[in-house]
Each structure stands twice: as C-alpha cells, then as structure tokens.
Length: 115
Length: 108
Image 1 (cartoon, chains in turn yellow, red):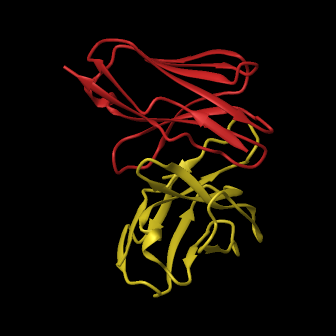
Image 2 (cartoon, each protein chain N blue to C red):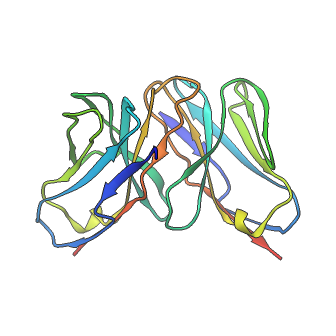
Image 3 (cartoon, rainbow over the protein chains, first blue to last red):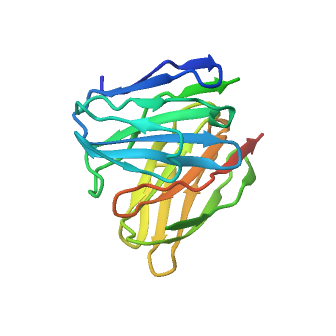
C-alpha cells in the first residue's frame, strides 16, 4: 500500500531534549516536505527536499533541521525543543514538484507537546 | 511570496450547495490544489487546477481564474461527512503554500 508513515504519532517531551520525528514513504517520491499546523495559522512549511542530499528552508525553518540521505526517509530534528514548537506536524511527499500529477501525500501527523 | 485569502468558517445545510472562495497572490504560480482535512487528520487531495476553467469530479468541482488570482471549490449535495476544513493551496516554483483553511459545518 502506498503510504507516508511518521513516528512517533504522539510525543510529550521537555524543553531542550533533542528529538527526531521520522518520515518514510514507499512511493519512490523525489519531493518531501515537513509542515507544522497551528490553530489560526494553518499549515506552514518548515523544510522541503527536492531529492537526496538536496534540502531547502520553507517558511518557518528556525529551530529545526532535516536530512535526506536516502530517497525514502526525511527525518525532522529538533536539537533543542522549546514550548513554541508544540504543534501538529505533517510529513508529505510527491513524485515531482512541478508536474500535473504531483499530488502531495500526507503522513498521519505527529502531535508534539514540549513542556 | 504568497498571500492567500479564504473565509474562516461557513455553515451549510445537508443536501445544499456551497461555494468556498480563495483569492491568492503568488510569484511563480504553477497551479492550485484544494485539500480536505477532517479535524486531527491529514489533509487529503481533492482537486488540482492549472488551466482556467472548471474541473468537475463527482460532487466536487473546482474553478480557477489565473488572471484574477481566484479559485473556488463547489460542493454539491452536501453530506454530514463533508464537515471539514478545506484548504486552498497555490503552488509556486518549488513550494506549495496553504491557506489557513475554511471550516465547513454541515447541519441537518
């Protein structure tokens, strides 16, 4: 089954404790991205990746890191989480960025709470 | 950059028709997506328009006017399960930027 998976689905942590949210897709997609969603602000892009070893900042990259060592995986790293990073996070992938069939497929979401 | 405007909330009656509007200002416009998102769940794809005009897909239709920076999503024969947020997302050269979404409540 074609899908995007994220782990963990729920996480409660404390300020400053490094964490990684994993994202994996099995569709051989080139393009992957991370979003956060907050009430009243909608979905905002954190980072995106056009392909392996190619990443770029989205609209709200501060406090986050990403890596793309393999095509299928795109982990989101919070080196020193802070309470303002409490949010619902979505990973998404698509086959190409600028093509007629590049619908983005979203993972199920990770609800992160930083105390 | 992107500037996207859509109504925050709408209410409609079961069986009726509702139109959700979206206006946008974007650089490097490369098509527009509509997504549906139920509370606490991931967005799911509804439609994609790259050319002007109407795209129909069952009960859902989407319209685009590139010159006016305007799109709408039309939902017909509303069902209770259509209660969700609807996200307008114009695409630039490398990014997809989402509007804040329109929360649609369908009432009996």
